[in-house]
Length: 60
Image 1 (cartoon, rainbow, N blue to C red):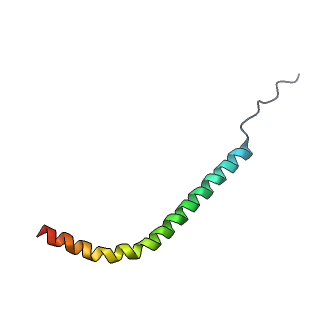
Image 2 (image 1 turned 90 degrees about the vertical axis):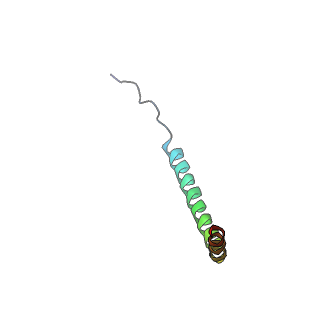
Image 3 (image 1 turned 90 degrees about the horizontal axis):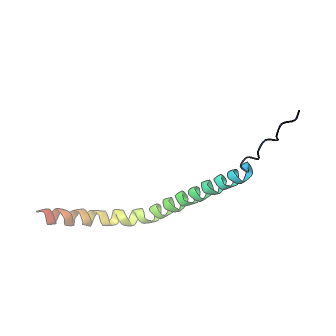
């Protein structure tokens, strides 16, 4: 006797492609964030000294 054929499951190739796309987007976002941070960090460091001095004067 033959039973029912197994019900088709989710398409795993589509799931894998979706997962790869999500990983690629995440990696691209991390690279972009790192590049922006690297570009902005020197400017933030240049502003940090005067900002801390102004806060110190304001607190006196």
